[in-house]
Image (spheres, rainbow, N blue to C red):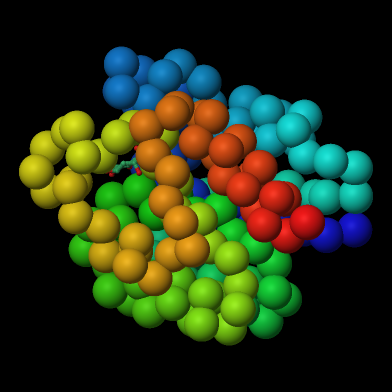
Length: 146
Ligand code: DQA
C-alpha cells in the first residue's frame, strides 16, 4: 500500500464558502472523495490541511523520511514562505516528487500572486484547472512512478 500526501495550506479549509467565484463551491472533503475515486487500488490518499506554516513544514519533513510523493497547494505561502521552499527543496533533493498545485491560475490574478517561491524547487507545477489540478497531479505522479 503506497501513500500520496496531498497537503493544503492556509484558508483552504474554507473551500466551499471561500470566494466560490474563484475556487468553486466544493469543499475539501469533496476533493478527498474525488482523489480517492481516481486513485488506483493500493494507493492511499492522505489529504491534510493546515493554516500553520510550521505544521506544513513538518509534513514535508515526514515526506523526506518516508519518500511519499507530495501534491502541495501552498496557498498564500506560495508567494513568500522561504521556510516552506527550503522544506520542499529537501523533498526533491532527496529524490522525492513534489508537485505544486493551484486551483486558480495565480498568473491571471493580482500581481503578488505571480511569483512562487516554491516552483523553483518543485518537480512540476499545475494551476488553473480547479480541483482537476489535483487530479492531473495525481495522474502525473502515477505515470512518472510507473
Ligand atoms: C491558491 C492561489 C493562492 O494565490 C492563494 O493564496 C490560495 C489558493 C490556489 O489554489 O489557487 O490560497 O493556491
